[in-house]
View 1 (cartoon, rainbow, N blue to C red):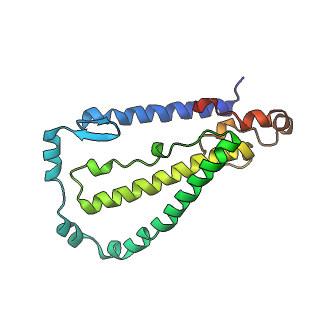
View 2 (view 1 turned 60 degrees about the horizontal axis):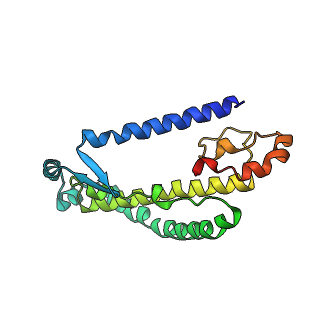
Amino acid sequence: MPTQLEVLLEKMKALENELIDELQKQQEDFSYEITKRRVYFEENVIIRHKEYAKQLFRYISDAKIKHILTTPFIWICIVPMALMDITISLYQAICFPIYGIPKVKRQDYIVFDRQYLNYLNMIEKINCAYCSYVNGLFGYFQEIAGRTEQFWCPIKHARRIKNLHSRYQKFIDYGDAKTYRDNIEEARHDFKDLE
């Protein structure tokens, strides 16, 4: 029989899926379709979008000086992000097959699709690509870390945590020593939901 926590986690997952479905309905509202990961707008929508694009010179001249001055601090983060991307991807490629953990699909987390929005100028498109990469990367890292934690230490925390990763519901209750010793191997390899 599932615990109350497991029931709530399942409800949370169902709501998350419902939210994703609702977001996908926007395809109809904004007249686009996705084919092979590429976004296609109707021609009349493309023309209308181009009318809203802010010209580069005006975009830069309208920018606040504090935004211009802080831009290098934002963009310098790309170096450690790219290094972490390479490191974590190598870790997963080498270790996950050894542990029997299903690999995380990078493309499920890092999505580049804002370049198809014709109401964005080139700088806005580059900034959007940067944000898509970094935020997607953190989701990718979290899923790899969650699967790693499930393999090595599938124990729930005693203290409240702000953000639960996708594997947390598979963990054993904090303080339940008997279940931990009896079910540790099963918990480590419970990836059936990913198949």
